[in-house]
Each structure stands twice: as structure tokens, then as C-alpha cells.
Image (tube, rainbow, N blue to C red; front, side):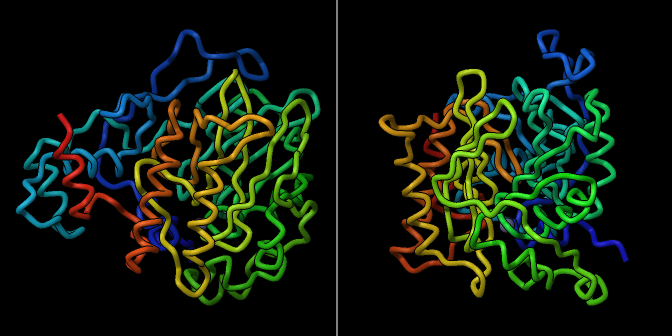
Length: 360
Ligand SMILES: [Zn+2]
């Protein structure tokens, strides 16, 4: 039985699903960079938020954000079964957002999107020494990722490194396959046991029993430590250990084109959205400390201004990503202080809806 990505995504990150029909239209940007063989690669359609951020929306997020602005506060947030009717009511059922991004696509110079479901997988061109893949997703994603790397004009034999933000199966299950193809696998040290032994910390309890029994395990080539400076080809990744979502969750800073990119995994998502914390395997206090660490992070002696957020799921942020870091921190701080659950989706909460209504 083939595991549907929505199944894993819906539990590990409650909103990984993209629902409903949309108009697919990745735009061709005449200024987009050449790939390995010099052909034009589509970029993705961007929108501007109320906060003035340039973002690449996913349909799921866009529809709910727009509904949060329009649904009268005295009306309760609709159930999943009733939400399509509400989208229709407010004209959100024929949105300007593609149901799924056209792949592969260029995000920034040397940074590409090569998979979008169940998670966002990014390819980084590190020059003649090879390619870096971030969070390759599930085993069923391997074929599509290889096809997309080739479509960008790169030889798939150039894929030398796979970096994981954490051990959940919707991010790391494909690691074993890419290692067999010659890539070295990097993951936060405290998530190494999960992927090497295939423990429940991978979230594999979401899979049918037969797939759990044959869960792909492998030896990690490069356990990543906090503060490690990882030089891969002509790129440098700064590892920031951010436990909470999983024990070994790690964010990475990459500087490209004068911008500070945060690869946030499930630790930082767009606009108050948080990854579902599975109580037995997550730690909200550690998560809060990690988010505080991200707000204050800097490469000595400077504080880092987060520009770009490339998260594990949902909407990608192309500027002023520090807003999302601050929002995540404040949300989890409230949850921990009030002893309320860390909610995966902000849209349904009164606090978020009031905030949205308060906007001009
Ligand atoms: Zn996760």
C-alpha cells in the first residue's frame, strides 16, 4: 500500500495538505538564473502580505488566511467538512494561488524547489563540488526529486549531500535511497538514533504495519552539532540546534545573494503556523527556548537579520522572515505560559482572527 503524503503531513504538520482546485501558473521570470545547462527555469508566483512580506503562498494557507479576514468574528471557525462552503461564500474557491507549485522552480540564485508534497525539498547548487538536497521527504518522493534535479540541467550524480532538519519521516524517509545513490547524510546529532534505528521518533507509527516493519534505516555519515559551520562546495551552512519539535531538530543558515536564508524545517513556519507537537516525542519548553535562540541568533559579532524563510511546509517567505521567527516565538511563549496546547494552525483561533480583523 502506498502511503499518501497527506496522512503523514496531516499529523506531523497539521496543514501539509493542499486542498481544492486552483489555477496552476508558475510564472516565467525573464530574469531567472540559468541552471546547470543554461536554460530558463520557472520561478514561483509571489504575493505581498499585509505585513509587506513577499511570499510564495501555498493554497492551503492562502485560503485560510483570507477566510480569517472575512468570516465574521461571531461565527465559529468551520470544521474541515464545512470549510469549502465557506471558501465559496467568500469567493475564495477560485484563488490566484496554484493548487501545487510547478516543479522544479528557482527560488533564489543557486536555490531551487524540487519537491512540495508532503514537504518542501530544496536543492542548493554548491558549485563544481556538487549539489545539496535539504529534506528529501518520503521514499515515494525519490523518483520525482531525481527527475526535477535533471530537469534543472544538473546531473543527478552531482548530488553529494543531504541535509535534514529533523528525523520525521516526511522529511527524512528518503535518506537511505539517496545515500545508496552516493550522497552523504547529515542530521542533528540527537535525531541520529531515530533514523539509524527507525524508532517511533520518525513518526513511522503513521505508516501501515508492513511499511513500519520495513522502514528504511541507514548509518548517518555526518551527525551535526550545534554551532557547526558546514562547508559544502562553495556554500557554508551554519547549524543551529533547535530541539523541541524533535530532540535533534536543527535549523540552518545559508547566505546567498546577500540574504540570510533560514531553513526552518518544522521549527519555524510562516505566520504563527506551528508544526503539530506530538506530546510523547516533543518538548514545548525546549521548543520555546529554541525559538528564543533563533530570535537572538547571530554569527559573532553580529545579530542575524532573517530575510528568507524556507520552511518544511506551507508558505515560503522571501523577505522580512524575522517577522515569522518572532511570531512563532510569541505564540509558543503564550502557549507555554498559559499551559495551552501548541496549536498547529493559527487560523481557527480567536486571537488570530481578531488580529486579522484589526488590520486596515
Ligand atoms: Zn516534523
